[in-house]
Image (cartoon, rainbow, N blue to C red; front, side, top):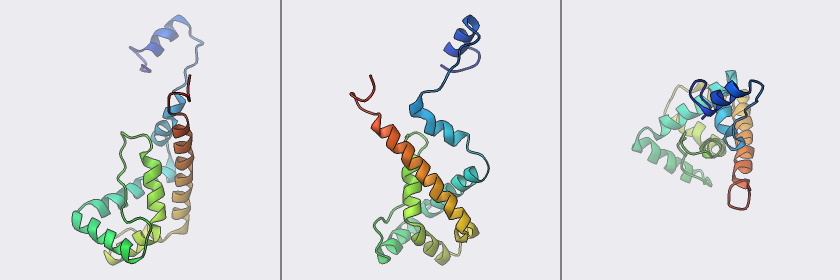
Length: 150
């Protein structure tokens, strides 16, 4: 629909050159993550790598759960990120941030090579991304439903 050659956008621009198009506001989270640049993009990618490392085998995943249980955590599982689901990033980042101590302890025991986990600035960026995506999730879910948008 928004392609540059064979789409409604290109057809409308041929008829009226001054027309301005904006993307649906419900999809702004997906658009934002595609255009994340620099440190924030790198932090998001690193979070996904850490999660994939822990969830890469059932043995690691189970031992992480046992580690969380022994530390009396509220949660014991990390969530996979799914690009298909709109609200996935916010939930993944929130769970990752909530389990930050457990992740650091587990990866120290695993002797992994994720040095950035000890960096306070890195965790500040994770916290920032978590807050942004939580707010976007709240906005998106508040606009869903039959009576929300007319």
